[in-house]
Amino acid sequence: MPTVFSANRSSLLVDGEAIEGLQSLAFRIVTEREDIRAVGSAERIAVSFGLRTVQGEITVRSASFKLDGYLDTQAKFQLVANLKKDDAADSPKRTVSFDDCYVENKSFSLAAGGTVVTTYTFTATRVREE
Image (tube, rainbow, N blue to C red):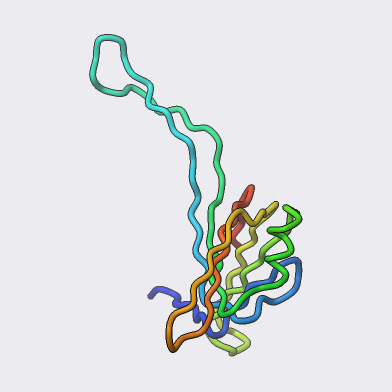
């Protein structure tokens, strides 16, 4: 049976401070790859792997002044996502840590009848799951 973590019970910390208005966190791990070809053949014979990075997005309702500051100063920070299923003491938990993060981009949207939503794009050197 799979463990389903709850977004309402989970939290995201930036340098130990909770992000208010968090709507979503998404990330992907990207590894450079190069196909190695055999001479005289159209097929690859091996694969060479290179740099591995983490790319992610944080979406918040309104804005995060802390993340705005990191974008302005191009400063490094750490993200820690504490995932929980529910509030029970024996409930499954998982911690996802992102090291050496930088905010690279910010997008802002405001729709009629809605509230402001800001999306921050970040990169990280690595991600660790515990």
